Amino acid sequence: MMNRRQFISSVSTVTLGAGAGMLSFPSFWGRPPIRWAMGVILWRGYAARRIPLQEVIQDMHDLGLDGVEYSPRKGELERNGLTRESFRDLLRKKKLAVSAHYWGAPFYDAGRKAEIVASFRETMESLKFYGSKNIVVGPGSRKAGDPAELIRKSAPLLNELGKMALDQGIQIGIHPHYNTFIEKPGEIDLAMELTDPRYVHLSPDTGHLAMGGGNVLEILRTYKDRLNYFHFKDVAGEVKRPNFGPNLRELGKGEVDLPAVMRLLKEIKFRGWINQEQDSTRLTPRESATQSIAYINAKLKPIYGR
Image: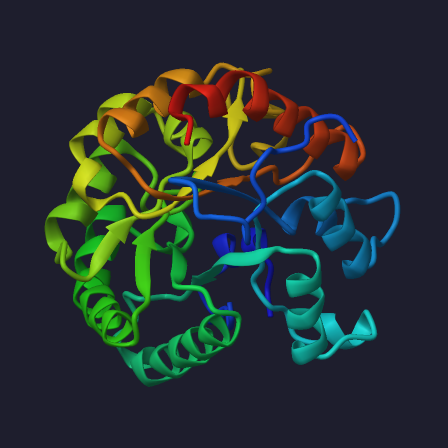
């Protein structure tokens, strides 16, 4: 299975499967309107050493998170001495829920529809095993062709997959992402126009909306009725394609107005998951996560409250 960056840079492979700063409401003690998660991607991408999955989950527990965005990779659990069942038990022990799986495929390639649908069914089965309901759908690389044409070709299958998911109690959300064919505001508009709001939602990333040249608040307000899941990311500076890693910042240290986003979410009465998405960091993963969660506690959580 490819990781997210590998998928975005390729159009030929279906991706399967998909201390300080303690948050004050763990996931199993009531259900607040906003639940906070972090992606395993931050720990997976740490170059200095391989961090065992058990350590990742312990870090998230120590930080008081409600959940983890976990997208299974082939062989990962086995390499960590885990099975799917024992990993689920570990999450339960640490009071962490799986917030979502991230999944993508070349939806525009009609010749691979059967393969894509089979992959999607596997992702749904995995998600249901972990008791979750969100599939974050990543588009493919901009290198695949004209973005508008790729969106037009992708929309019918996305509608079909969204209906399949809804029938299973699952939601899919398009995830606009830098370097993909759904990146810029006009591409987001076209994808939303051509997909059925009953079946296809919007799962935005604040950082990718900004890097794609969008007005974050304007996009969120325009599609407020289709928002189902969030990545909160902070970024700064001019992005030089294709590498956006140097632009990533811990929350509150970049240029995205995250308090304004939280005020909008309160205004529209959004309820659901926010995943603090940090693809990479100059710090250790735990240090990075601690800084971002301290910012969530001090600056974001009080805006919405319980």
